[in-house]
Each structure stands twice: as structure tokens, then as C-alpha cells.
Length: 316
Ligand SMILES: C[S@@+](CC[C@H](N)C(=O)[O-])C[C@H]1O[C@@H](n2cnc3c(N)ncnc32)[C@H](O)[C@@H]1O
Image 1: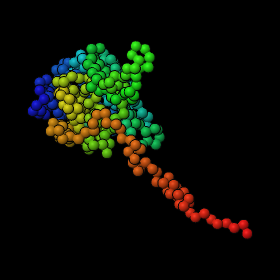
Image 2 (image 1 turned 180 degrees about the horizontal axis):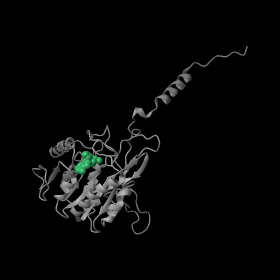
Image 3 (image 1 turned 135 degrees about the vertical axis):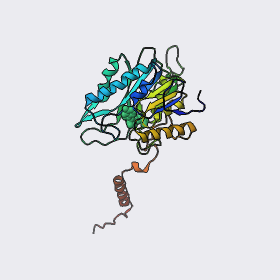
């Protein structure tokens, strides 16, 4: 099924990769009912990025509702929708978009399964509030019979050598040897300047973030759709794991970028940060920049004072 991958522009269930250069509603209208297993996206947040026109919150939510309604129509009964969002900022006041969008999903009969906190360490520094260092992914399903494969996304245990100390299993290892459930707080670096996946797009998904959703919420051959595709990350994560990937993007330079990255993924040359790689710890890595230069200067001066010859004093 996954040999000779080609990128098509129009959806048909038998294809493998669809990159639609245009409005997501047009792509969605061409997709048959119940044919997608996962819809995952990070929509424009209405904060005035180069690709969006800032709208009143109500108009923004109406636009989002129209896209979400179509996604739900296209979603299979065993499928999931994951919407990754941050805050809408209105004259300095923040409105968490997940709370504003929640009634749209539940109003369409979906059930929420998780509100995942995606924590990262880099971003704008705020001076009138604490700097934002997380966003959320709200996960909804259409029915109770949804796909959820935990084993492929388990993470290493904190204490893999721990054993039961009493009861019938005393002496046996207490943890699952395949690893533990990753929980609903995910620490994954965001794609900022030093990230290996960084392109000119201002807000890319890291591929490893989407791999976790693809592996846990779909099976091989299933369709994964991103209505706001950007640089093609969702399609990359999907085809990396033998799923089908589709997405729409309106800005031509991002369509070109997505096409280039997908081709690199097919050729095996796309550089990405591996899933489950521990977050860089500058202290553990012995990074010299961890020592504040001013503290170093004080330490050097103290050292020089210690090296000075002791004075010889006379009482006469
Ligand atoms: C937050 S970014 C998504 C980035 C993406 N997650 C990635 O990994 O690159 C949203 C993207 O949606 C695109 N977009 C905005 N309105 C759109 C629409 N109506 N249809 C399709 N794409 C749209 C923007 O140009 C932008 O690239």
C-alpha cells in the first residue's frame, strides 16, 4: 500500500497523500461521510499572524464551528478530533480558546476524552503577565467505540526496577515492561529557532507531537486530516507510520514548503527530533552558559584574594 507515494491535490479514499492548495472547507466538502479516523489541527488563533485577519471572537468562533461541523461529518464512528489551541488575546486580556471552542464540539454530540497540556520552554517574554509556556490539545470522540492504542505510545517508567513488596505478586516487577501511560501533561520542545525542524513558518507542530496522536488514535491505512496544514507536519507524521494523510493550506509559500517536506519524508531525508528523546538539560550537559558571568567574576576575585601572600605584622 505504501510504495510509490505520490502527492495528490484532490481527495479520494483510495489515495494516500492529499495536499489541497486552498480553503479547508472546500477540501472537507469533497470528503465522503465517516471516512476519516483522525482530524488533528492547530487552527489560526486569531491573534493577527501574517496568515490571518483578526476577527471579533464571535465571528472567529462561527468560522471555526463551520470547519468543525464538516470535520465531524467526515469522521468515522471510531474516530477522534484533536484541536490544538492557545489563547486569544483581547486588549491584554487572555481568553483560553479551548474553553470557547468546547461548547461547539459538545453541541455536535462529541465527548471529550482528554484536555492535554502541551508544555514547552520557549516563547515570548511577557512583562504584564507570566509568560505563556503551555497550550492545550482538546481531544473528542464521536462515539464510545473509539480507537485508543496505548502500547505504541508508552514512555519509560520512572522506577522500572520497582517490585511489589507484599501480596500475591510480592517480588515481581510492579510496572508494565512496555512503559507507562504518557499522561495528559506532555513536555515536548516547540519548534523555535534552534529546533532541527524549524522552517520560516511561525508556528509549526513538532512531528513527534503528532506521531503520538497518530499512533494512539489510528491504525495502519487509516486517514488522518489536518484542515489547517501549514508546513505539512500532520501528513509527515501520518505517512511515517503507514497511515494516509490529507490537509489544506491557503498560503502558496506554505503549500510549497509542505510539499517539499513531504517529499523529503518520502525520501527519508527529513530531519526531525526523535519521539521520546529527553528534553535537553543544559545543567546535565555541562553547558558553560549555565554559570552567570557576574557570579564567575566574583568567584575569580575571591580566588585571587586567597592566593595573596599573608601579611607579616609586627607588634612593636
Ligand atoms: C497554526 S498554523 C498550522 C501550522 C501547522 N500545524 C504546521 O505544523 O505547520 C495554521 C495554518 O492554517 C492556514 N490557514 C488559515 N486559514 C485557512 C483555511 N481557511 N484553509 C486552509 N488553511 C488555512 C494558515 O496559512 C496557517 O499556515
